[in-house]
Length: 207
Image (spheres, rainbow, N blue to C red):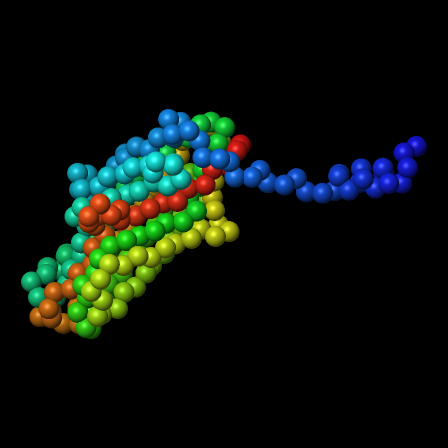
């Protein structure tokens, strides 16, 4: 019969949990592709939105060129709320899964005293889990570039093995003024001087 140390080792190996597979190295560039499928919304036309993978494939970016909400003197009611709904498809090798770990949103805001603005954002892998949703508020007196980051934290959701996955990306910009004849205030999520508006950070894991 095996000795007690051997028996203990066997029992320990049988009861220890199997560790989760570690994140994989980023796959070669020619094995990862992204495609813009649909674009809809009052804040974006198809020709004003572009998507691209970073050179190291560790993120993809969404660039807007005409995404603006404004309120105050001269602004129409519909100008105060602008939306954009985008669907992209990210394909990776069948031996890998991927997840969005964090999102950086960038833009510019000019908000007169008493005005305010919000960014609402949502993304979702079609066919899995609940959408990731956030709302960010901006107070009057801001006249500068802005950036906010949403982190998935422990709620990271990986795509299924062996298939690409469509990702729905919905954003909304709102601007409000404290009175209708107030000086104009606005918030944008545009690309200016080659700066990207949104960066979706990716992690990969072996199947």
